[in-house]
Image (cartoon, rainbow, N blue to C red; front, side, top):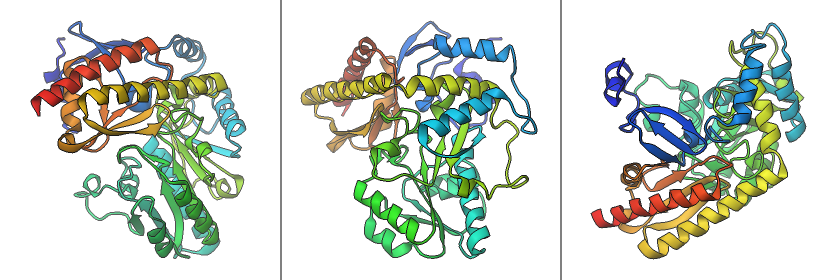
Length: 402
């Protein structure tokens, strides 16, 4: 069977508009299509393949674990799932873990849990969820409605109620809005899809203080910022606060589908048998890889390397920008970076992404003004140099065409 980009249009839902290529294989930070082209990858599957493509350690774990166990249901325990849960508890100080299959399910679970806790302790009127403009929390109908981008939730009928969206980093508006009816506040410590915007420490301190005052659960969505992506195991470690509930996914199993919700006993105890569940959640194979990943990326030397690579990329992009003057700033932490387009180039992130693709460089966008980079956390300096040479070619074309 001959497979081409056209095959996608013939057999797939038109939810995506993929690049004009079909990936055949990928190793490290390189991707190869079925026409023999080689691409340098700064996307890592949208921050998922955090050890690069097909890393030997992950492949070895998959081979060994899959020879023993691939799937069992949650009416049984297995060593792989409990090992990962134990490692997450030990590394973070949380007390309980619930596994799912994706970031959207992690956030859905966290939001359901917050509402159940409020219902059990304070009654059905305490149900308001506060979220923030330009946030993104997944594509289930509940999570996408909680996300602060109406274009993603419009057109599907009546939306889940009691959800309020506020400006991000706006202390005054938050103070005026939170109340005894608020059961949860959910935020990304760094808004990913919203443009790589970092939460202000003063804002987070006030949010934590008022959540405590009004008995509202503080949820951090670390689906994208977690698992060392931001330069610490979880991004909350770089803030002055710690959330009551933490959601994780993407890179947790280095390419295998997984999600996790971490919290304390006093919250988890409200999910008794029958309140929530997941057939594939805690899949042994994904958890086996997750245990390997957590050991790898929580190592202090590994995290130092992530932050050194961050500094190196920022320095190189700044030097590039001295020649072409297309970027206003570089946002983000660790290896979640946003190159913000400036002046007449604002709003052209998709155009720049296409130009990068023309030069065999794979990148992401975050809103119309931001080119997003989320490379493998162990990307080599040599590959970074290659990638930034390709980026310069794309930037040069952007300047020439505008």
